Image (cartoon, rainbow, N blue to C red):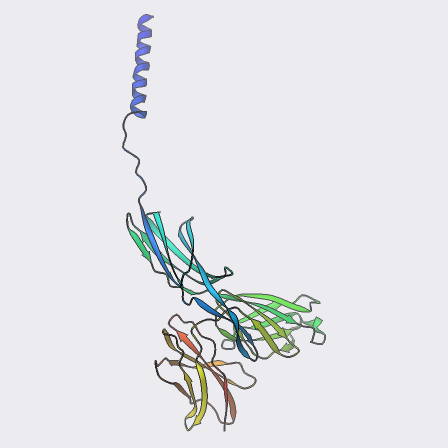
Length: 346
């Protein structure tokens, strides 16, 4: 019995020594995750945007401006998100993320105005390496805008039969349509049209009954969609007018002093250049007044420091034409329109 007890005690002692070897003593330290840093420099496309009110008679500016005041920067990898918000100073800011786990990350930058609306946004990929500072370069593009449409039907006789509204969003592309179903007995149609590229549009509406018959067709009206903004349009069918309230204008600046003259070759157009430094050219719009919407008839390269000109050789005799010109920059952004000129071709 004594021997058996000694054997048991010895076995227990060996087990304890083995466990102490497994859980005690010195061990190699656990490998810590390697980290790096990323630095994002932000330059505002245009720190100050002029607030505008546009109507059928033209454009006039408010006394107050709308400013891009802050930038939100997100660093993402899968479901991991690191975020910082900084205030722009003189249109610039810089953000640094430290101790970021090594790997591929996506940088997302959004510039916001004083009302926290996203006006510009962009993203890029960046590789974080151990102990190094990666520099991210993000190309910012105007955010998509939206249209809030209100149409008062009460001026149309028997307007209760209106069953569908069709919005033609761009006279330069008649396939760009949005159909809006009208509930029975509604006096005012209200609808939202999202995801519109910021630029100046010619839009018109058509109203149909349940059988697809045309009840009403409007004239083409000029509507400006701004980056990250919702443009509210109230369509007054009694006068065919449209009133629009928007918050700020979109660069580049519009060409000025558009003039038209006749020559043996056609209609000669001339205008003063836009003052922006990154211009690539101009879009020439023409319409046959008063029934057509403006359509692009020519694209003219920018000639720095010179009077910009174009001869419309396709103008036909016996017709009255109207023209406007817009400026286009390197990012493809289109300016507001120049003044409109009308000329009779004898």
